[in-house]
Image 1: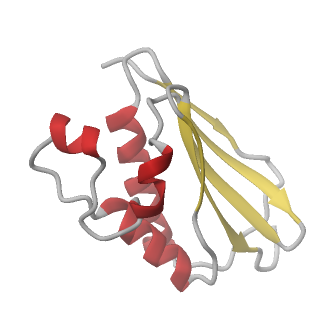
Image 2: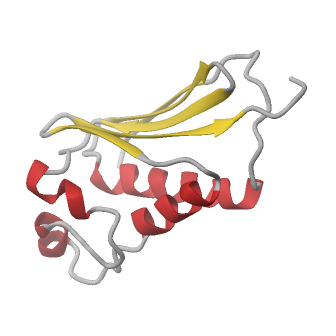
Length: 132
């Protein structure tokens, strides 16, 4: 499958205060989902947006998006969208629940922006922590 992966991380991005192993797991889960739901020829974009005292990390894709009716449930353990259950009957649905829990342990929350048929962006912020 051919996907384009782009990154946009400012050279002067500050360090953040976070558990590197746990945040790596968040990115793994979000990127795996983006790969799974982005059609061939699509794009996955990893970016960092600087904000006063924090950094927003984003994983965006050009996949099919999540139907609005299913959005309230996507962070529930073992919940899988109707389309996902049809396409992949053996998945567990734990990835987003784990990512959300880790982000909450860091005092933040996961935001989701969806354009059905055009893609999904997951975003969370982490406090900056010291020298750059």
